[in-house]
Length: 204
Image 1: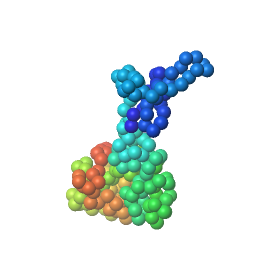
Image 2: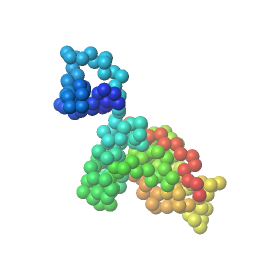
Image 3: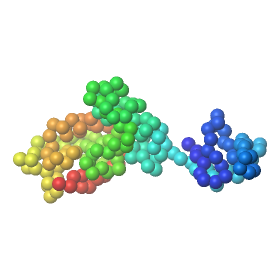
Image 4: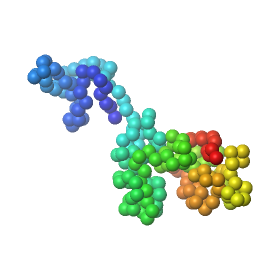
């Protein structure tokens, strides 16, 4: 999208036409269509700023923690429920668009890891342990190595961390397995994982 920055131009939506505000005194103001016929387009170059919002979610790319997956005020994605990944328009608990237990991310949610990592829940692959854009058998093998560790039996620590303790609660259990399965099968071709390297993932 193209926006007008501070200057002698006024941002207006008028059937896609760019308008220039003419001021000839406090009581005499009017707009002219900034067309090729009336005004040299180069006159506007210093006042134009190209703003990208690739996923059309209302958050510009420079500030969006999921560039290709909507999770902003204009459009969201289901991150829980029976329709994970589906587009949704009502943020928070959303049983209609996201299914039973559904949640629609429209506020740049970043719950994993608990301290956040500037990578939104709508797009991140928490189980992409080797940062290669997918969640495949290699990641599953890594997850299984630590699955079953608990607060009593071989707890996760800073010195001996766990792959799969997504919420940093010192264990790798069924809850983590469910989280891992949500992204299993994502690949470089199908819904590629963004690069969200986070080291360490947990600070116990």
